[in-house]
Length: 108
Length: 121
Image (cartoon, rainbow over all chains, first blue to last red; front, side):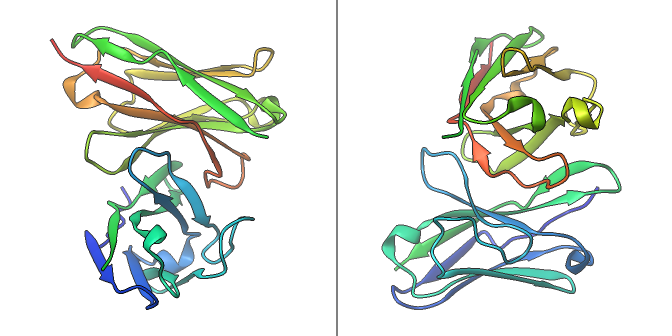
């Protein structure tokens, strides 16, 4: 089955840029979606179709996808961005959903 | 406003069954697929399975870890999706979320608050 690999943790100072990667075999050929999850809360979609933002998500959140790596970029990081972030794709060969293992973003 | 409310969670012994419900409102339930996603304590998200809308056949797909034990169904007249869990194992302990999406989009834009299932003797 398709595997998505994320770094367990990323740390960034306030006001700086955070980049969270999601690796997968030829992931650039798939659509990647990203979710933010804060403690005790349900996940929230922050990026879909690689780089589209749902309404209400700040422009500071952006995404890209090419080759074997998709990236979620958070610009001008704020304390409130501290959360777990998950990438997700649909494995059309098996017709199943796949999540990455998640990345804990720490704002220093 | 889209709302998804899960119910039916609780403590259950290994080998027993449990049925979760997801009651939806704020959208035309019958036009959407419904997925279940779970999260074991302190762990990441795991996709469990989904059911397509009737327009797309109402068919189901499941993760390998639950295939043959879990069954997803839907009652469009009541706007409810179900997750029937049989032969439960301790590793099925998790918060179970229902989500909704269009049949052809495969990303999860609306989530319930989750319901905790604990499998323990």
